[in-house]
Image (cartoon, rainbow, N blue to C red; front, side):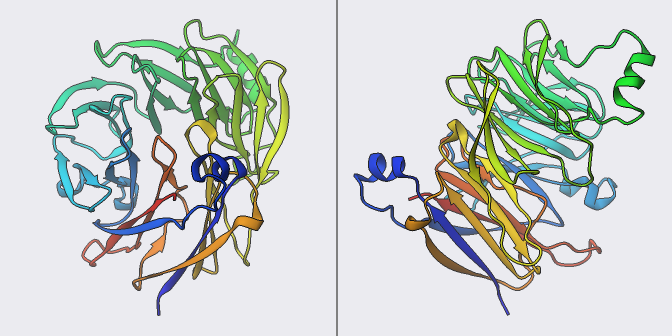
Length: 372
């Protein structure tokens, strides 16, 4: 029996007219690249869209150190070949990000260190003693700072000096005021962040759905969206993104099941693209393409049929369906959204098998989709 994946592509009018002279786009080119793995892994894609860096998730090993699982691997997304291995970390990576020029990879580890790696040679350039408890990492678009999301704050680190240069967090006049504001719950824990193209502003979303706009230099902020009552396990706002001009913020709203925008000049919200769900237990994991040229989401139903959507706008009349057969035991990790390449025209999905026993033979794969 094979798992079956349907790839549904909804091409927008702009892409049809500009990219293909008014003719419907050709089907996606798909590649299934086997990945040797012992459990679950995640990835980041280099700015040129040709290389993926993958790392094992220590949580699935109860954070027990298995030295062979610590290195980060660089994979060619055309062939699936391993082109480099980054050795030297003493704990599992929790998040990784390529520098804007693609020459350096930053990795944040469970022990609180940020490692900077030379992508060409695989050498570790420096190790920054950051703080423990972080969960996401990224670069400002100008490459001047590394951004670490650590619970309810953003830490900005200088990759050259290794110094902490700023801390973006809500300030309170007293502990009592903090407790009153949070009503005893840490609902201000951040779940997503984005930076504007000029690196002057950042946006964050927290556990309760509050969205804030931050000034990178002075740390001041404006509330764009008020918090909601937290409801586990659905975090209301996910995957923030600025448009290239920096005047619009785009995000996925779980509560409305739609991609929405906020005009930062007028603070007005507009519904953009509803995200449909199919099946008995469909789950959506939405990603927004760079420069907002498209969206992608995955659905899981009955653990058997997974539907992958890629769209630029809601154009049902231009949809087509393709079916891909996968080997037994290979399944889409339902916790991970798809990952876009920086140009937005390559989408990568993570597949693999969960096994409790490390002695079991397990494997994974990357499903690479080239958008026509």
